[in-house]
Image (cartoon, one colour):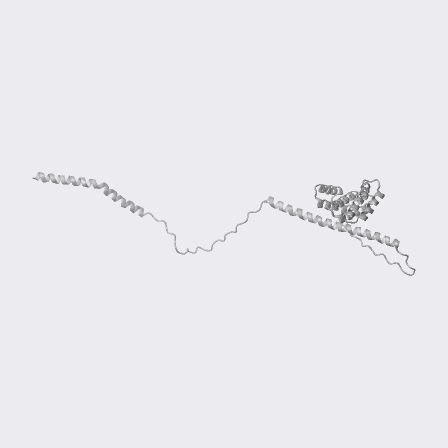
Length: 271
């Protein structure tokens, strides 16, 4: 009987021990899980964004204005060169216009002198006891003098180069410098003929006429006089005075019969 009870006790102990050993891994894992969860919950959380107004931290620094990107140097140089060229052309046109007005005034004064001379030759004799009227004084025209110190040969060469490059205003400006600075130079005649011819090509017949007349007045025995007379007639015809143009060409044929200009004048007279 004791043996049976002892056997039951041992059997119950064995069964109890098996139950303990069977449930130990589950208990260990359960004991580890809460610890892990506790470790994870103990990790520091990210601070939440403040919901209230921010604390003042002092005056804010002013922001620098955005500077525009500077233009390229080549574009600036191109624009400056273009503006300078426009200014030079404007100055050249003003000087050309001033010179044309001076030449026209000289031409009108010469015409007035010629008419006065004709009137004097036709004037009736003054009755005795009457003093003849005093002649009206002709005001002197101030000549435009150039301040250039460039030699006449260089000016003429520069003017011809400008003319070949079709820079007509610049060519007239340079040639006028030669005429004003060297009025007695041998190149003055050719320079003034080129100026007058440029104006004629531009259909500025009044300006061309004044310069051709100024050429003949300054160099009456020059080699360009026949050609100048031919162009004077063309200017007069362009201004609508065909009768005066015919008289000019007749004078050319009469005074310079063997010149090339006279042959052209004969053709114009027949036409």
